[in-house]
Length: 233
Ligand code: BTN
Image (cartoon, rainbow, N blue to C red):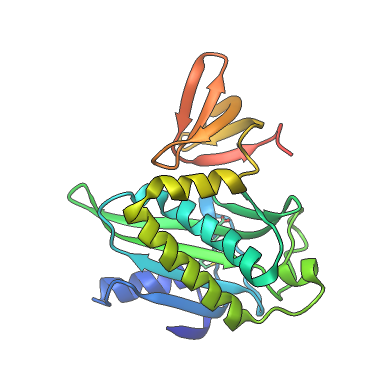
C-alpha cells in the first residue's frame, strides 16, 4: 500500500493489522510526520527518502528479522547503486562510517508467541540527511546523482523476499552474510543493553538469535538487544 504523508508507517501498519489486514502487508510512505527509530529516537522523514513497514507473522526466528532486513538493505545498496555498505550491530546501515539507513522491529505477543512483527526500514535516498545528527549520509550524496526510489524499493523487496526464504531454509547463510557485511565484529565496543547496563568487550560474533557475542574481562557474554557506544569507529 503506497501512501503520501503518514505519521509513521509503523502506526499505519499496526492499525491495519489490528483491524484484520492480511499478513504480508507492506506500507510505503513518501513522508512521515512522526517517524521514529529505536529507543524512541526521531527518524527524520523528508520527501525523497524510503520509509516502509513490512508485517510478518512468524512463529520462529523472529529475533533474526532485523538482521535479515539489515542484510537486505546493504545488498540492495550494492546491487542497485553499486556501492558497498556496512552493518553496525544491530540495525544500522552505513556507507563510509556514515549512517544511510536503519531498521527496527516492533512485535506484539500473545500467549508467549509472536502475533505479528512490524519491521520498519528507513533509507536516506534523495532526502537531505538530518543536519543535527552527525555522521549521516544519503545514497544521493554518496553517488552524486538522484536515486530512482521505485527501482530501489523493488530491489529491496526482492532482497527481503529472498532473505525470508533463507530464514526458513538456511538461517546460518543469513548470519554468514551479516558477518561479511559487519563493521562491528573484531572491534572493542561498549554496548548499552536493554536494562541500561554497559557491557565492554571485543565483539566476536552474532549467534543464531542475532545476539551480539562479546569477549569481556569476565568471559563470553551475549547481548540480545542494545546500542553500541564509544570505543567504536
Ligand atoms: C533506527 O535506526 O533507529 C531505525 C529507524 C527505522 C525508521 C523506519 S522509517 C519507516 C518506519 N516507520 C517509522 O516510524 N520508523 C521506521
